[in-house]
Image (tube, rainbow, N blue to C red; front, top):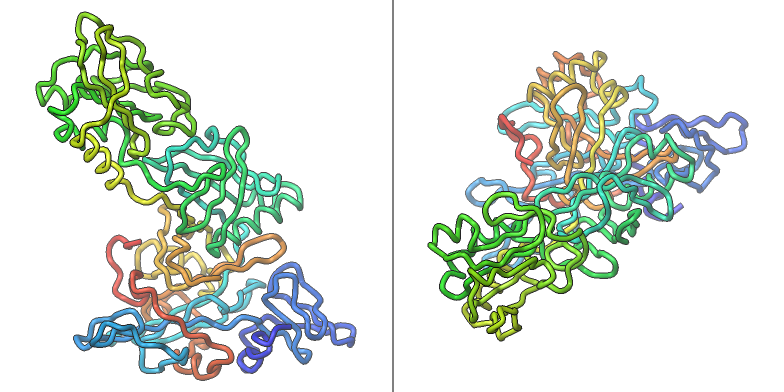
Length: 520
């Protein structure tokens, strides 16, 4: 057992009533942990399979500290992230100590679980916010029904829609419908966790755990690419680090830059996997009174100046398989085009560009790009946001979580739906899906590092908090006898069992007044 785990013993032994129970059935010092259905038998000085609970002096203890986020007020009374900058603008050092005068929020990270379902949540904390008596019910949920949505900012072809995504050869999810400028993956879910082989379930659980804890995961897609994704980092596709998210589709790019091209090019073709744009045919070109150029591109014409399926998806220009841009030109009409016609071809990120002038035979000849067009191409790149991978954890807060709050769980569901109870994960705001149940989705980058754990059932363990006014908690049938003032929770552990952490200033304070629509 690590020194850090031992240093937490004092705290968890003091709060034994709130920890999972242990049973030494044979008198050999081996105890059984009931924090999850696995029921690990743990020897002295060892931890269970999840590394979250250990046997310390014959007692079952939690090996991680309870995380408390804190913030302070500036001279105007406005809440600011943890420590304000000094007059010289330098951020002061923080010694890691709890500040009992600062507004504090007990997160579910390190709180332990409510399994088996009959017992109240590990921490039911009372605190005051702007004179309002608030209750926060804090727990770590064991999520068998959970998944990860990954947004990959790229036009590159990563694989056909619905193709399996594999980690170490095991299917852990699939490619789902692409969004504007991004490829999307749906990973995890109960069918991969428990509906397949044991190896598949373990691979799925470990991949989700790494992604949710902001670690890199390499994966392959059937019929597609090899990817490395990590929350907040640029995706790596077939060993190539993506730099830019496209500025828009080909048609949108024309709409944005047509005026800058006018007078410097007679035709502009913006190559895109979805909608390739042709300036002189486009409504923007018509608005600028540009004459037809007579250059016809391949693909299916949609509306004026907009073409679908000019090429197959790929890693080339604009997310197509095109390497040589002139290959998408189907014909040049000699009755319309003219020698000297200036043609700019560019991708939706500006990474690929070429400039041609039609010769006497109306054949495009490569030429040096005029400075005015070079500026516009650079501006396309400037308007592209950095390519990132975004990881969203999604899970359903079922019976065990709700039963840890109230003896009548459906009342909690209704309170969340009617915005009387706020749900957070590690203090971070979540989106609660409409409809039945409490299905939440949260950006892992807004959560503290290493917020997630696992149990080998397999399932992810994620922090979750329910905050509401005290009278709401009582009306739900909440466990009033288990309420503890936040100061008592913090003092019991000191630095041995409670770890303070700076509040993420971009997150709304969890106890602040609810808006009609949660800002995530």
